[in-house]
Length: 321
Image (cartoon, rainbow, N blue to C red; front, side, top):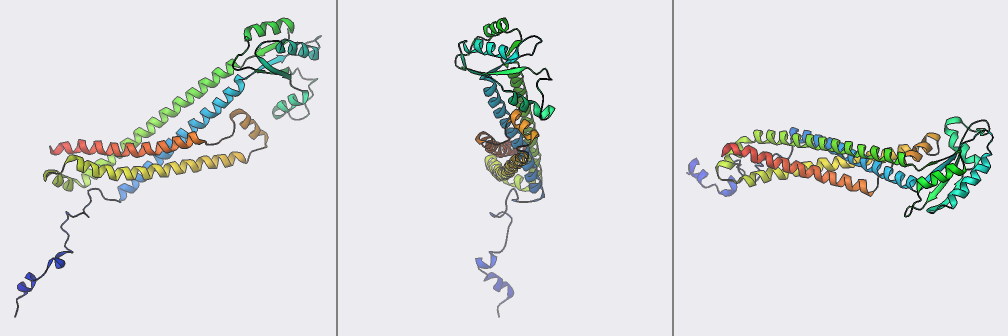
């Protein structure tokens, strides 16, 4: 009769295939999922969302400012103030004659009374009586952007021919608009840097936590001769996937937010408030530049996540040297 020990000796490799020694391929250095991993995913998604919102907002504002500057740089405005004893219509005709004979002027026309009423309607209401209000008459002048006129000379000629006339070349508004756009761009860049720094710090702390949790495995691998690059690559690959998923989630959320803002603004179309907002800032829309900015931000978040994790691992492994 065979002894139990002899029967155990007869077991083949198939009988031992289910035995797990802890060092097979299933023993991942960094767990694919976990509480800390899910928390870091949401942190990266939020940071990516804020970064994409910042990039998209700066892009929209810069585009609107560029369009506005392009519009006002091609026009100048001449005002004819109503004065006692002065025929306003005759003054307008004389001013138009001076303007049209100037080099660099493409066209000039005086706004009608109805156009002036439309401009004043959002503030004074409908049916404004221009005869009872000292409202200046406006002349809109289109200039040649390639060869603009000499504004100093034109202003002097206008003042000499029509004392009630004044020329506005919009240089003051262009300067203020440029300052505003540059300030918003610098502020947006500062916010973006702060968000990315917070993202890097979050990844560093998460990597240190993962290294501390798996310290025994990392120490054994390091002592048996595993190269630092191999261990760092395992963490880098894990956090790269995590950073890309979090960044992509934040980018999609930012795109949806811009679409929602656009839809909400469209509900105010054809209203006085909506018309004034569109006239001042233009329509809220996200173009290709903003899409490219969001895509680059997603890739930047993923790259920073992987790089921060790799550098943290190399710094941590110095303890074993």
